[in-house]
Amino acid sequence: MKSDFLRKIIGGILLVSLISLAFNQPFQEYIHIPKNITVFENQEITVDAAIPVTAKLSDDNAVVALSQDEKKLSLHGKEYGKNGVVLELAGFPVKKVDVNVIKDFKVIPGGQSIGVKLNTVGVLVVGHHQVNTEEGKASPGEKAGIKVGDLITEINGKKIEKMSDVAPFVQNAGTSGDGLDITIRRENDEIKTKLIPLKEKGDNSYKLGIYIRDSAAGIGTMTFYHPASKKYGALGHVISDMDTKKPIVVDDGEIVRSTVTSIEKGSSGNPGEKLARFSSDREVIGNITTNSAFGIFGELNKQLTNGIMDKPMPITLSDQVKEGPAQILTVVDNDKVKLFDIEVVSSVPQKFPATKGLVIKVTDKELLRKTGGIVQGMSGSPIIQDGKVIGAVTHVFVNDPTSGYGVHIEWMLDEAGINIYENSKQKAS
Image (cartoon, rainbow, N blue to C red):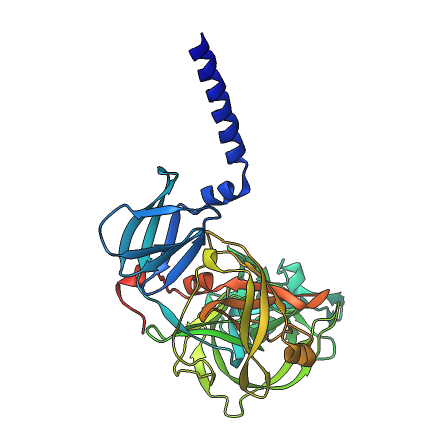
């Protein structure tokens, strides 16, 4: 009887101890050590364990090296491959962490101010207007069901690439009295409609009753250049049409150098802006093949330099970015790239590509004095932390221009078509 009672007492004490341990914060942090960790060759990452740990490699292969102290576990990637690390608590194995070592990967950070010109797929409808005819006012385009944001891709079966392609069809249809067979692209749908041009009163010209545009231009900041593939990424966010507010569907485009001429300083409720002009020679330094939520992408035909960090640098994966001091590379005067201090306020360890993974705050006194913080045109400025590229500036907080969002570099590389996991069989120079 006494032995049964003693066992119950001991069991109760153990149960209470285990429950207390489970709710203990250091133990919780220990248990939440990731099950999977990715590290680049020749790089090291440190995991805080909160309580003393004992770690052992599950295999004898030499792809990763371990070092540890009382509350930290450091993993050093030695060569491409996989291994496991068994974590022990009081001599008992409690967790296995799979470690994936991928080939060394580097990019050259940007920071340069660039001019951007986008050519749309077809011509973009940016508005309606009323044609003043003998019978009254009407908009043929609106009557045909064409909406703002539509892309006119074909007229009478002929491909439309620029605004000048449209005029001959309009005059011919007006003279003959025949309507135009128009193909439009609306988001992911293709729509066909009939449009009959109307004659302007007191004029011999015929009108469609719509405003159209075939290109857009602006400025931004280069984020990275990957020498091995010649691919680049910039801006960190999508370019939308100023009238329709919808993302521009790109047929092609080009980038040129640009020079910052002045700064409109930002303030609460009034985002500032870099004012810049395209380089006088208008020399095309790269193309634009993609305009997405993560920025613009393409290939450079010549390498850009920033004069500060012109050698390839390693990157940091989204789940390894730390809160704390960092820097950005950007231009605020002419074409000189400078480093400015910021702080990473928070970082979301995203498992899948997503925007706004970082919240940053400008702390540099010089940058605050010149710009007030983050301004339009600064989008794409690379963020550097501990000698690695971690992401790019994307948006400013309207009510606090000293702060804004950033995107993780991992997702920009993915959108550029650079797979750091798949391409790990060949080292990037």
